[in-house]
Image (cartoon, rainbow, N blue to C red; front, side, top):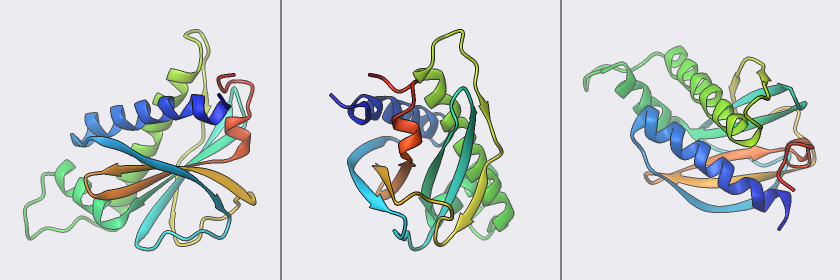
Length: 162
């Protein structure tokens, strides 16, 4: 079994815990794929968080805009005629990624191992600074696809399950 195959249940557990705890949504694995740096995700926002310690890598989460708007409306208790500001939605996306990445590392690392994360960076359109290829874990949340993107530096790290 490869490192990627061993990591998938960890990522799925972290995604499930995060989305169920924050948004009361179930997560269903909808496959995985190899993508190249030119892959596009229309009508979506992406968020990148750097893992600074104990490994040097990053994770990227891609979420459809309408899904994040809906989550933000729920978090702020907005009524039908209210729309969240884009800054509120993007802040929530950053918090979602921070929580999810913390769960992934807490599951992966030993109990006495600490980790350090950078600040989430949010954007839309083409994702900058990607390697030639990266692994995508594709999950369904409701009827929306969410993509967790992993560079080789993450799944080939010394902390990935062997």
